[in-house]
Amino acid sequence: MDFGLTEEHKLLKQTFKKFCDKELTKDYVAWMDENCDFIPDDLYKKLADLGLFGMTIPEEYGGAGMTFTDFMVAMEEVAIASAAVAIGAGLAVSFGAKVIGGMGTEEQKQFHLPKIAAGETKYCLALTEPGGGTDIINSMRASAVKKGKDYVLNGQKVFISGGHVADYMLVVAITDPTAAKRTKGMSVFLVDAKIPGITVNLIKKVCIHACGTTEIFFDDVVVPAENLLGQLNNGWNKLVDVLNPERIGTAMLSLGIAKAAYKEAHEYSLQRFAFGKPIGSFMVLQHYLVDMLIEIENATNLIYKCCYLLENGLPYHMEAAMAKLVAGRASEIAAIKGTEILGGYGVCMEYSMQRHFRDYKQMIFSPISDEMAKNMIAQWTGLPKSY
Ligand SMILES: Cc1cc2nc3c(=O)[nH]c(=O)nc-3n(C[C@H](O)[C@H](O)[C@H](O)COP(=O)(O)OP(=O)(O)OC[C@H]3O[C@@H](n4cnc5c(N)ncnc54)[C@H](O)[C@@H]3O)c2cc1C
Image 1 (cartoon, rainbow, N blue to C red):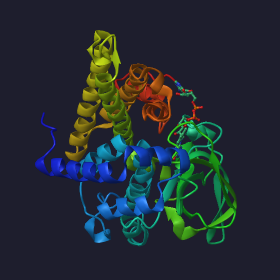
Image 2 (image 1 turned 45 degrees about the vertical axis):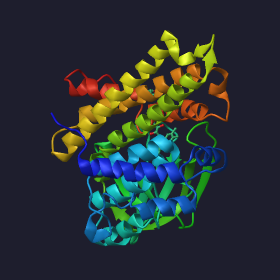
Image 3 (image 1 turned 60 degrees about the vertical axis):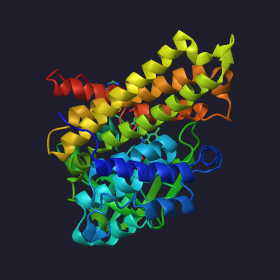
């Protein structure tokens, strides 16, 4: 099976690498990690000008009409430079463009997609609630009740990436509490973040600082009926369907962390001396580096295999869940072993390793936990549902 990169992909990769080398320098990324809770506006604009947000948006809506694989190739470079910037950029593409493009009306697409491509509007997906993310179907309490022509939204969401900067929130809420199947009573709303009744608080966390995570309260928020996204009471299945490639995207973010940690550890192992030799000449550290490389190679192959399957209209769900797991593990091994290779400097702020060590953790349980991804794979192989 040939899922190698084409000449166009290699050119695209070079373009994004050049951009990242110039704009996402080690010092700037470290500065963002310490000082920013989202991608700074000028950088966001530069990413938009480079075409990142509009890559997968069809040309008639102001995008470049490129493929998901093209987007992944670009995101790989961004994620190597900064996982936080890649996640922040991914919100507009994966949640904004993908969900509105896949579920929106013609009017919604014409309004939002050109703005996303131009980097003018930001989005968040407000799904998870305090009662639990893995079992969100049963724990969801947020509700939207029809009053006249509008819906009145109440509830609380938690762990929402980019909620504090979002111009529009994609909010999932119960619209039919009597539905025999809970997923048949859920709808998605495209909520203007400026509507009164919305409160957003940043959650302090140890990882991915430059893409903040929030809790959001909706208190009698009046949402116009035309802001319903997709069908009433039938938003869940469509949303899950549209968001499926997100697991491949999550894997790519992990791969970026793994590659960055590997590169720093490899370079350090040649520069640091002990017992008169570079520490990279000690077999045990060489094995650490080789272990990292094997995991990175496995993750890369699986991610691009998923891209190949997706582009060719073949089933990719199981491979995407596996890619999420394998790439997450690659980032974990690279961050942990990389920290060991750097010795004491592994935990010092002047090196990036400490950031990779913190950042990889977010990839293990978001958007779904590793345990849940394995549950799903087990089920797809025909084993009984375990939960
Ligand atoms: C930094 C960050 C950013 C996020 N961004 C977003 C976002 O933008 N939008 C959004 O909607 N959500 C977001 N999330 C939420 C994320 O999707 C959830 O954290 C995730 O689904 C897990 O839910 P939970 O944290 O409530 O853990 P829980 O569901 O409480 O799970 C706790 C533990 O129990 C395990 N577990 C639960 N059920 C089972 C089972 N059946 N079998 C085995 N193990 C099980 C889990 O794997 C986990 O280890 C984000 C989370 C974080 C931390």
